[in-house]
Amino acid sequence: MMLLKITFSFIKICLLAFGGAYSAVPLVAREIVDVQKWMTYVEFADLLALDELTPGPIMINSATFVGMKLAGIPGAIAASLGCCIPPAIICFVLDMIYRKYREVPVVSQILQAMRCMSLALVISTLISLSANIMFHGAGISFANLDILSVVLAAVAFVLIRKEVADPIVVLLGCGAVSIFSSMLLGI
Amino acid sequence: MSEKKKNRIWLLFINIMMMSSTANSGYAMISVMEKVLVKRLGLLSEEELSDCTAMAQSSPGPVAINSSCLVGYRVAGLPGALAAMIGCALPPIVFMILVTAFYQFIVTNSYVALFMRGMQAGAVALVLNFAIGLFTGIQKKKDLFLWILAAISLVYIEFTGFPVYYLALFCIATAVAKTFLLKKKEGAEK
Image 1 (cartoon, rainbow over the protein chains, first blue to last red):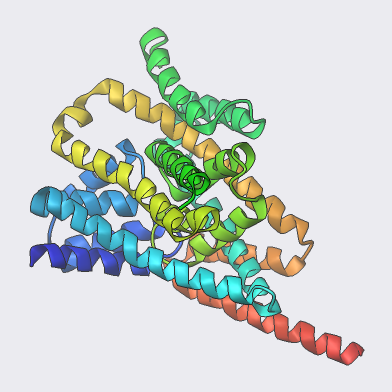
Image 2 (spheres, rainbow over the protein chains, first blue to last red; image 1 turned 135 degrees about the horizontal axis):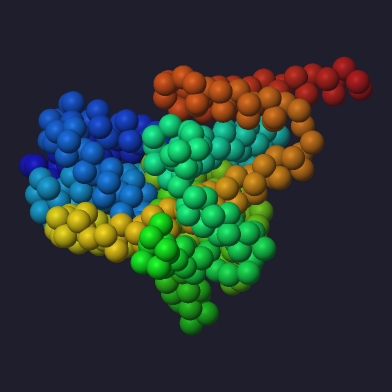
């Protein structure tokens, strides 16, 4: 019963979350903490920290975390399925409609309009992400600036943009540089 | 299933799994897909990928799952879609189960924290790269209407707390209105 309840909660969260991670965080908080009372806000903060530590979309991460806490590994899998399968099916159906009617002018106009929205969403994600990582989420001022992160991001950007190295290699390299610079230079 | 198709599915599955194990957001993942699936492996065209990502973002749920699923379908039909979805979902689920189980150790280990700090900086670069890609895509259309829509969307997202699906509905409505206005104009010119 509990497994079904967890799955259903995450289906609800994921079907309401348009536009990726930053729209999902408030939805997860509302459903899991306020409505279902499965965890406290302090535990929710743990979840956000763990999300930073692990790869993958925050929706899947939070589903796995909540499921794992409530019902162990079966719970983690039930919750994750709830947040992957229904959205995938909906996306699939929308895509089929799109492929069938792509020559109709209104469909291509809608898709173009959606790209504008996604540009806005990406810029917004970029702003929150940079504020969190380069200024430690503590307000934008020179004192809070994490110089190493800025340098790493700039170098990584050039390497990815100029296609010097594979993005995955660049990301892992950034992690390695971060450890070495802390050990050797103390920053 | 032919040998060739099987190979394509395996190639897709392994690459998506690698991406999903390193990228920490859907947007970062799309940016890697462009480099690996389009440019290096040639599994699908740039145009196809951009259709997939636009669709993945305008439907609900995790962008990474949606886009993997659509990309998989274009590369190898329904089995491809399934393989891509599993490849995308498996690493975060496994990592998160492990991380939750060893939570105390991980949050207190300073090497893990340092490594993550570096990867996060790299993630900013990935997202910036993706934003530039979208930006140039819109620029190519040379249409003032699209820029206005993008600006309105950004203001809406940054300064109001309203859910994004109202914005999605608004974008659809303006696109429909624009199509009808264009048709009317063409009719008048004839």
